[in-house]
Amino acid sequence: MGKQGLKLEQMFGSKTRARLLGLFLQYPKEAFFVRELTRRIDAQLNSVRRELKNLVDMGLIIEKRADSHKAGASLSEKKKYYTANENFILFENLRGLFQKIHILLKQNLVQEIDESGHIDYFAFTGRFVDAKDMPTDILIIGSIKPGSLEKLIANFESEFNGEVNYTLMPKDEFLDRKQVADRFLLSLLNAEKIVMINRLSI
Image 1 (cartoon, rainbow, N blue to C red):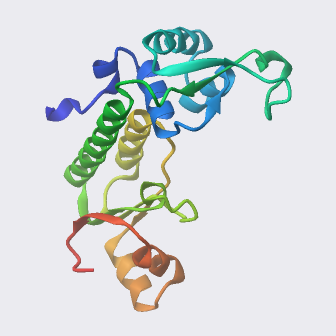
Image 2 (image 1 turned 180 degrees about the vertical axis):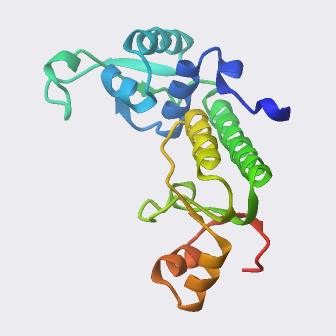
């Protein structure tokens, strides 16, 4: 993939289509109204409508008429909502593909951050291990310019299709906090996580 990184729109035709696919594959039991989808994937209404039609025509998602009593249905959104078609012949294949793509995206992020600074420790936690009560999703110990890190995380969020909370901690601060058994740090170190870089022997 080189320095260009992985771009989902290159594989699936457009960023809107890729984000819609990712959302329906990640939450196959949920139903979405059009305007809700535009907010969730940060896309233009017309673009979402066009790609929904493509996915319905393909058979991957199902268009349904909404019950007027359906929770969350406003007057303007009562007509149609959309849900994944888990019986679609390629559903599990596509779901598996997206899971592998997310692994690649995470590996790319780790490599890019490691190359942009001096990283002693990097771990995915929080939403990446289904621990939604965690205060952060990524713990990074080391030194990297905040602006560079923010840009790399923003690019990752765009491709990953979701907001990510991260904590950057200098090595000295980490050692000080560890020494005094800092509650926040211990909660992260003791939580379930996926460690990608560990040059601290922790």
